[in-house]
Image (tube, rainbow over the protein chains, first blue to last red):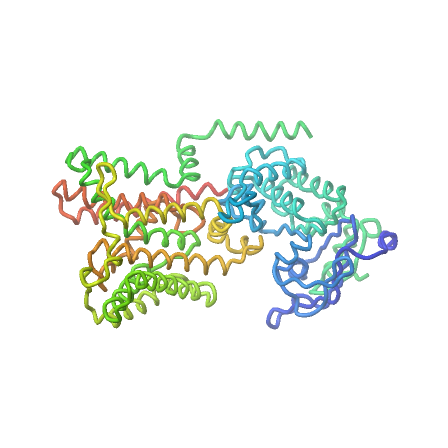
Amino acid sequence: MTITQAQKGTPVLAAHELRKNFGRVVGLDGVNLELYAGEVLAIIGDNGAGKSTLIKCLTGALVPDSGTLAIDGEVVSFKRPQDAQERGIETVYQTLAMAPALDIASNMFLGRELRQPGVLGSVFRRLDKKEMRRRSFEAVQKLGIQTIQNITQPVETLSGGQRQAVAVARAAEFGSKVIVLDEPTAALGVKESRLVLDAIKALKDRGLPVILISHNMPHVWEVADRIHIQRLGGSAGVITPQSHNMTDGVAIMTGAATL
Amino acid sequence: MSLTTTNIRTVDGLAGQRQSASRRVQHVLHTNPWVSPLVILVLSIAIFTIINPAFAQPRAISLLIQQTAVIAALGIGQTLVILTAGIDLSVGAVSILATMLSAVLAQDAGLPGWVAILVGVATGTIGGLFNGFLVSKLKLPPFIGTLGTLSIFTAISLLLSGGRSIQATDLPAEMSAGGERVPIGPLDLNVGVLVVIAMYIVVGYALSQTGWGRHVYAVGDDAEAARLSGIRVNRVLLSVYAVAGLIYGIAAWVLIGRAGAATPNGIVDANLASITAVVIGGTSLFGGRGGIIGTVLGALIIQSFTIGLSLAGVDDQFRVLAVGFLVIFAVAADQWIRKVRS
């Protein structure tokens, strides 16, 4: 807990007593979470522990039944993903949330397309495709992804790692407060995972706090500053890679040990 | 790190060299789904001209364009709906409802021509909005929702008109103005054709150059991804069905001009004809892929078969036969093209 002590101050994002039920199934059972500036907070937990429900509540994809969310100490409520986006929270979902038939640039700006300046944009609603392509290419380059050369190629023609990288680049381009990554390395090989982990470190170096949901313990222990453990819809505690090793983490996650 | 990059590049390069001719064709069709209908149209025009040179005469070409206009217009709306992974069985029914309501009001209530036309367009839009409500708010599968409205709108049209046709000569002149001849060069077109071309330009622009167009494709491609990207999926769906209805309303006016009458059983098979045009035009029934250029090509192909085969002196059933094979071919081609998804 030493790092937490050092980081005292207002959390960038704080969730208090979040609850969410799906019919009679308990999704979240009063979860607290705090994210501080410049840290990578990992969320681990078994299947059905409420990881996805938790981040969906943090990012506006689900509306919690009760509990509060605060950004920089200010209470907020998100009805839709766009509300969270407007407050600078960007999410890379496990499904990546990309339209496979559209090209990279269109996907980067999906839902927030740029229009041309002047009458063309305001009256004729004409898209500024050139500018969107330019900024997309820049965003991809900034994360050090060199394998993507053609920004107009449909997303479905990309490899799994490249798609993930594009999704992370999109989040980094628009997220000013928090980047949430849901299982970014789940479907990737060693080389491609490296690409994504390096991108996470690049985000951290830019001072952007990251919430990382992952099943891959070595990846979590490599990049996380703190680790939030979900168990059976509730929070089982917060550890750090220094205070506990992976075996301890898994034990807490599965209920074999408690904090 | 540089070593890794080089390795990846090499692998890509090898894959590129290994690409067979069929892969390259697949790629071209994947990015330009209108290429295959264009090839088919050019081929059929060439073949029909060889069989009977009259096919290439301005007279036959003018006829081809005039006869294609209504289905091509309805096809715009159908394309929009199919792009969102939906289907609209009520195309013809909405259009006939707009036709009959405006004609009955003009004849019986003495509504001025322009007002009656506006009533028709508004009727189409409301019909489309109702379809959109069923699909987006009530979450009905589009096939079922529009199957219901197909019956509803057809019945209302028949009840309104008492099943009678109203001749254009009994209507205000504006209502059949779509049939006014407009000679362009050697071609003999009409106002209705020009209006349909204008609709293609406007909707084509909206689909390819505006955010709304991107959202239509995204919703059909992956609705959940679109929602997570902040697109209001329901609103996009509602707008698509409403715009489709608006287009059917305008097409109703084109139809009166073309047919010289408002008739309740004018285009009963328009739903299947428009779906056929869309599918032959390379738009995927699974949504998110295709466009209206393909649809007008598809509509022209069907019509060229009709005219070409009749000029060749062949039984019309051969047209039906050929169109059937073409539909199967088009959908099979779409399945193949979509396999690019890795």
